Image (cartoon, helix red, strand yellow):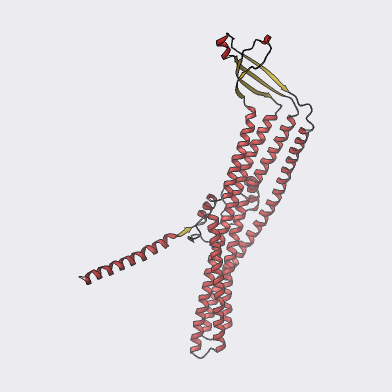
Length: 444
């Protein structure tokens, strides 16, 4: 009986151990988050505090617009007062208590465009704030793509350095075969050990850079730092040629910073017109209905209560305010001049950035063709050098040089791919993702 109980307990322990291994492996599997470029962009937009700040700024500008627009609408107010007459001449025949209640309405009839232009200025400011938000969104998209491409570069560089280390170990085996046949010196063996050891720091450094890039990507996308991520996309091999003239047209038409500055300029111009109109009279109409009575005395001595109404027009003419309006007009005129200069400055800077990015993109495309050919030739050369080294036709230096050449060419190709994609992301930001009516992808 004891043996049977002990056997059952052992089986239970084994089952729990197996289940623990299974669930641990499953937990590790689900903890790895697979993420692509589009998902990175979406997460970066959803978690961006900067974009939330821009949303609040848009709401604030809309609130100011509604406040300004209220000046065009009727204003209606109600008021009620109840008071006690302490002392008054007997000839006035007032009661001890009086009350008055009424409703007053007023409406601006004509202000020579002061309110209309102020409302137009506020509306343009709302549009400008929306374009500012759009510009921030494309900046977030660019930074998200830059982070993703940096991860791709770091991951691929780690793979290449690990492959270089494996090649060095393979070369060491070839050298061992030659040493077994008595064709390798002690110096060659020591030199080969040095080559293998020298690749370890490169692998460790590449692994550290990949880890740093991964942490940056997690921060940009709001992913838990303890969660492991796996990139699902990679650099493409072929990229389309871009028409610079079409890029320039798209920039002037869609770039949100330029559109925002244009709206700010229009807003400043409307504000100038509003301030000029403030020098002219303002005509408004008003009406009022009031109810007057003495509720306490009416019960004692029969005082009468009653209501009355009146309406009229009001003309307000500014004659002298100590130069306040002149100073305000000068300020808004300077705001307009600043907006015009800022737009010109932005156009020059953006056009220069687009020209530079376009030239770099074309250069990187040409470099990529050369890189692909260089990698192909380096791979063939390395394989042939290994065969020749095994047969004693080349020495160890030729073998190591061939392997290093292959590693450098692979790294150079990955760096070119990184530069192409980063440059495309810059162009996409400058033209707000529009190229011949489609988003810029640059992929064949």
